[in-house]
Amino acid sequence: MNGVPAARPGLWCPLGATVRDGGTNFAVASACADGMLLCLFDERGEETRLPMLDREAGVWHAFVPGVGPGTAYGYRATGPFDPARGVRCNPAKLLLDPYARAISGEVRFGPDVLGHVPGDPDAPSGLDSAAHVPRSLVTGDDHRWNTERQWPGRRYADTVVYEVHVKGFTATHPDIPEALRGTYAGLAHEAAIAHLLHLGVTAVELLPVHQNVPEPFLADRGLTNYWGYNTIGYFAPHAGYSAAVREGRPGGQVAEFKAMVDGLHAAGLEVLLDVVFNHTAEAGEDGPTLCFRGLDNPAYYRLDPDDPRRYVDTTGCGNAMNAGDPLTLQLIMDSLRYWLTEMRVDGFRFDLAPTLARQDGDFDRVSAFFDLVSQDPVVSGAKLIAEPWDVGRSDSYEVGRFPPLWREWNGRYRDTVRDFWRSHDGLLGDFATRFTGSADMYGGAGRRPTASVNLITAHDGFTLADLVS
Image (tube, rainbow, N blue to C red; front, side, top):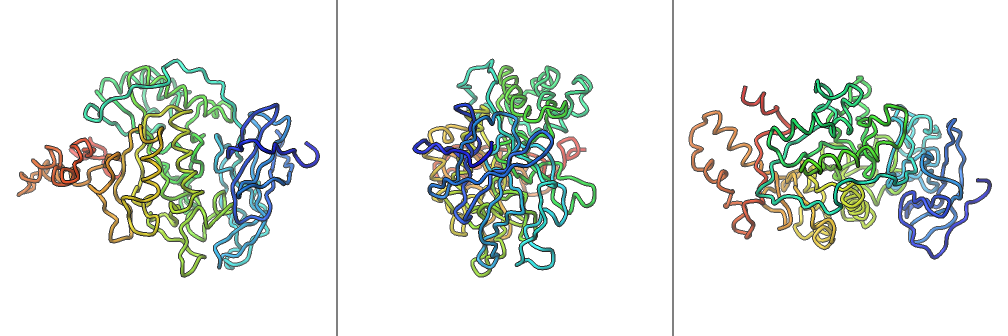
């Protein structure tokens, strides 16, 4: 791997790391960087930096012979660090590949992972972050599926969804082997599947399984974001839920996740993913530089037009993804297609979904994101469920306003049924309306009662047992 890797001109260059022709093609997008370094790591952790000399339409790419699955890598973007203009390139920061199919390692929070100097947000940090951040992994595809590719699925009217945390659901089940507890393999175990079938559910909705990291303030206290709503890798199954990774096989989480889906499908259960495309784990302007911020901050995040140092935040998490930028929209759509076609899940529940429709700030039923979903031949055929609210805006509660393809968590059903259950007065009429399909919310637009996902409780509150006890 001495010298500059050879490019493959004229060939389609998919983003991410693609194994082919005796090597791997690497491609990463950044319109604001003036140079890109591909950083390869050997088994001892030694880093080799290779300049990526080919650039086309904002995509930097290079083909490296001899590199295959299991190779750890990252990027360093050279270019302007000018927060006043919203750009934050800093080659001292090792960056994850936004399209990495697997990620290995943890974030060690501290000044080393900040793009700026603590106390001086306009000055770039010179501290190298490589020893403090995860690595992207090159992956292959050697999984052999046992179930049919085209899973028939179920009608919405026949769907009963059970929200499941991969770790929590399997961690204490006495009939799941101890080595598999807390893992994808544990959820695929016959004891877990038997329990799900006994409950009578038809689909599991997995709390976030994209690679995620805790917020720094939690890590400082020795805590973690247990639910996983702090994504850093939209193509990578979270490594912390993998028995294979536990056994010392980095990258094994991909095949293990596929085997889990295979097993659930064989039992007649659909697999839905709770996805967090509204914000990332890089938090606000004082947060760590792990991936998107260091590659193309203005493309991936909505910046305050009056002060591009700061982020527009409609999520309560410090940032909001820029669903008005083509690069971010491509990332979201590519990720959805990947999980549907390669990982074979059946659909998605979108966390804080109105943020994805804020192309120009306000919630818009004809936003670019909704248009792309409706026109995509793969994504439009999946189960699409919105959490129809976000935070901090006058139009943050959008129950009943999503386009026809979408189903919505019906917060009004949840609140009415809870209060009726608790014997609050004056609710009989509203209870009857909710119980018979919420026609006041969906009928006027010609949407069927199945537009409403009727729920009583979820991870945001008590468990059902606690709620009624």
